[in-house]
Picture 1: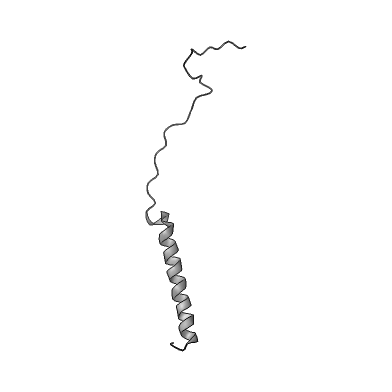
Picture 2 (picture 1 turned 30 degrees about the horizontal axis):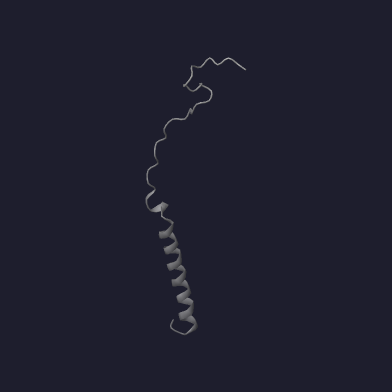
Length: 60
C-alpha cells in the first residue's frame, strides 16, 4: 500500500472539490415564465381561429 503524505482527516489536494461558489444568475424576468408565453400563444391562436370561424359564418 502507498504511503499517504496527507495527515488523517484532511482531503488530499487532488481529490477535493476545486470549484468556487458560483454567482447566482439574475432573474430573467418575463423571459423565464413559460406559462405566460404559452398563454400568449394560445390566445393568439384562438384569435386567428376565431377570425376564420367568423369568415365561415359570414361575420366579416
